[in-house]
Amino acid sequence: MRRLLLIPALLAALLWSAPCFAQAPSELGPLCTTETTPADQMIDACTKIIALKVFSGERLATIYFWRAVGWNKKGNYAQVISDATEALRLKPSTAVYNLRGSAYFDKGEYDIAIADFNDALRMGPPSGIIFHNRGNAYRSKGDYAKAIADYDAAIKAGPKSAFSYQNRGASKRALGDLDGALADINEAVRIDPSLPQPLISRAVIWRAKGEIERAITDTSEAIRLAKAKAPVNIMTPPGSVLISAYTQRGLSYEAKGDAAHAKEDYASVLEGVASDAGSKANQATAKVRLALLKEADAAPRKTAAAPAAESSPAPAPPAPAAAPAAPAARVQAAATGRRVALVIGNGAYAHVKALPNPPNDARAIARSLRDIGFTVSEGLDLDRGTMQTTIHDFLREAARSQIAVVYYAGHGVQVDGRNYLVPVDIEFKPGSRATDAMVDMDTIMAGLDDQIRTNILILDACRNNPMAPQLASAGPSRGIEAGSGLAAPASLGSGSTLGAGTLIAFATAPGQVALDGEGANSPFSAALSRHVGTPGLEVQQMLTRVRAEVVAATKGKQVPWSNSSLLGEVYLAEQ
Image 1: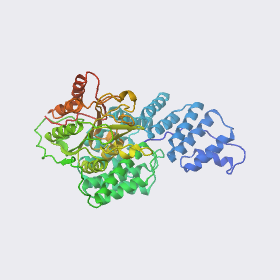
Image 2 (image 1 turned 120 degrees about the vertical axis):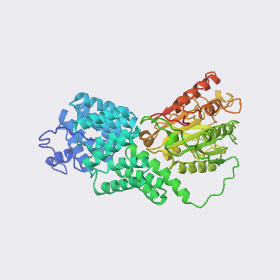
Image 3 (image 1 turned 45 degrees about the vertical axis):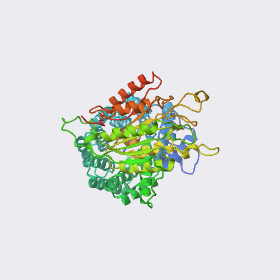
Image 4 (image 1 turned 90 degrees about the horizontal axis):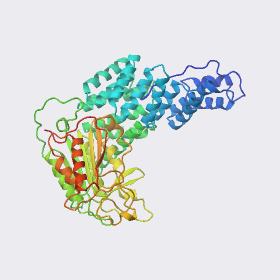
């Protein structure tokens, strides 16, 4: 469950007389303002009442509110916002601010949603429903402390709020408090055993604990309940419960090694109609995971011809030394499960400017990661086909890992806000789509998106516009003669931002050049390889050291950058 609806006090005797329509005027009022009216009938009735032009002020605001509710049932959040905004212009109310904030939430615009919920709370009186909904927005932003405080307030106002217990549990799980999360979600199940959503949340905890059969049992029951009865709250985005349940069961089946059932569930996810941001993220994950499983079923591929591509497993990681218990929010990557890494260095470009150092950089980073216990898939100077195969093989391996690292050195391009990695056989031809010849970074992120995995992506590529004529003779850099360099991600992934977290590190700041370097390695990868294996150094502290070293080495010409939704301390090399 995402949100709760706050119903305004209805105006008595809404309609008395009006021009004749298909329905009698006395029928239009109840159709428009009854919560259980089907969406299309509700929208139609409210539209006809508005067309009468006999109401104004608070009464007209009420009609716009209910038409917005009808649009919300259909998942048309742009129309919800439009009608709610008109209702607020006519007569501001707590209920309308709550409704509009909920629509912004489902669009993924969390800061605007929080602003609307704040306005609703200021108008008063304080409502547990609005505290709950604001908590959802804070949780989606990764601000779990504020989310938990809001759920506490919602539970205080309504001790029987199963959804508030469920979502408080999900926030505790995101912070690593699995036992506290389980207690809250068990309470939600006890309060209302007919709800599928708490079972889905509990399944994520079981999977994080390695209890896969329990996860499958809970998601199977959630699917049964969701099919048997429509969501009890009309604010639940259409189809979102089944999409979430099938996604989580598919991930559980895949973790179990049951590819056949996982494929069935991912296919069911893609059959749903996604209207909200969370469902769209789940479908992106399901699409990638399904493609990977189908690819694995295909006839065995021939060994890639590119001799530079390598894939070398690491020796089994050493047993971690005994250490004091860590705080709940600390992510002890080395001790909690399998750790995998994908390392690619592309430099031998045939049709754009070649780069001498990316293969050297990749070798250095791969060696450093193996030394601290990672299983590394390594690829050098990969054409598009080999690059895709290497990435897909890695994503299949990552499904059974606790932490995944991706490192890429080479040319990078941003097109319409999406990041692309560039294979060595790239060739831009008139009339062809440049993106078809590259590898979409969003595909890698969707394949890694999981509420129990920590993902760290490190990109040593340009973030400038190398098409500009003044850059033509700027010296060796990791830009190419097309498009823009890498952009900051609009999102770090729904699953990862609700789970262990994701960090994306760029070799340079937005709009800037990532230098290839004058020695055997780029300034960024040289610094990274020196610090990545430092025992007991938290990953963001490690990147701070790398940043300082790169700035000094390049005399301020290159400043590494990062975006993070990590929830606690992550250690690549334990003490």
